[in-house]
View 1 (cartoon, rainbow, N blue to C red):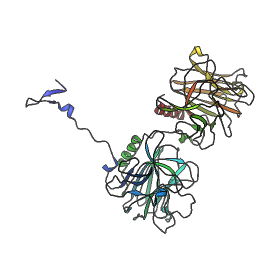
View 2: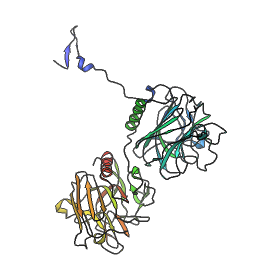
View 3: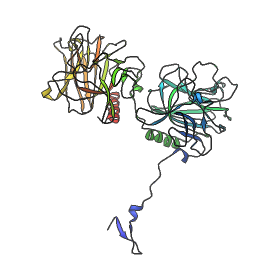
View 4: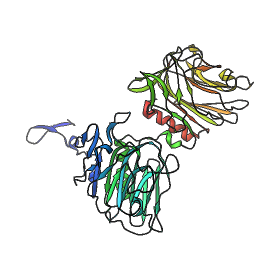
Length: 486
């Protein structure tokens, strides 16, 4: 026998190969000098009237986090995926760490969070000394910057050589930050990589306050609070080694399922709608599917021709009925060359030439001067991107559809277009150029109004003001695969 055998005493037992010890999963308290550690949703947190009255310190040091009054406590809530969060309202919510530790040996901070809304100077986490002007004068602040969707670590501003890391793109999605500060250096890591900065060699002491959800002793900003969701946060009273930082990063990414997000393409992101968008609803009917890019290009619908916000296989979908449901993209529309459009969808019924996503002039058929992504002849089992049809060299790309959830993304630039899906990429040339459409429509074709409506579930729709590089297209494919299994 191999897996089972007789022990010398005659008792049946597991062989040595089955008794291999297994290592325990990493947790932050396995590293020395953990000063405090909070988790949203921990059963030891004190929750009163739906708000966190006290965040329990899991480090064992008794440095619990509490608000100064019952009116500025973060909510005990969940994110759209059902994960526990502490939700700070951006108005006056903050948690103060009890009995802040000495940072004379340096400091390392870790936080898993989501910045729901960008506010210039909005605080995420800070430490400071009373009477010094702001937290970053002698200590540090990690907060939003005055450039939209950017964060940075700033500290020791009273010194000639201050700490100011390069600004980081914040994807307005789940993210993490791990930063350490020693006497003369700082390092900040997040999902997108790491940045460092040097400073005047001066040690920290003991701060009067460590605050989560705000800036510290900030007398100059009118909005020192942050619109943030916090999953987990903690601090070590020393700078961790590179190996320890790696462990901490891997832990945060794995525990909170933090993945790449379209928000990292902030420079060209023109619109972004998915299951984490907010919705304006009448019952379950969608009046507005709001834009996560911050550009204000919401999908809108009215009257009886509104799709339904529902769920399919546990995922939020915008369900178009195939009869009259359609949504139009609001806001200022951009020229569609160069551009990239992407949609995550499931076609429930195949019908000849019904539209999933279309762009058009005000009074002309969509594909005459722009394009439509549509069902081809139903019998073919294909979808097609068809455009510039009045030109001798028009755009025509066909890909198969198996009825499952999938992603399609297409780019156009200088007479060349490509359509990529999970199975590969197909390219075609076209004559002329795309200008600025009068309408972009989801769930239908367009000719001075929606027609040929599709019975389609839409999980996400995105647009970019550039022809994305192949590497970024593949990131979008991987993102859709991780979220919806395409």
